[in-house]
Length: 69
Image (cartoon, rainbow, N blue to C red; front, side, top):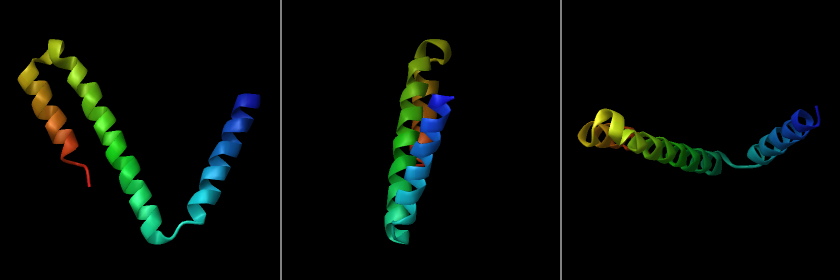
């Protein structure tokens, strides 16, 4: 229960911080988070080289990276 309670407070704090940002700051922050997440996904995909072949995996990783803003 304690972990859930502390996570709730973490989320509330993030929302409060988010509410204090201007629209431009919020958009920039979300773009940064999106790009970081997409890069993490692309890096995870690259670990599947043995299962799908290097060319296929590289192509799909590039496809995912092209979603970055």
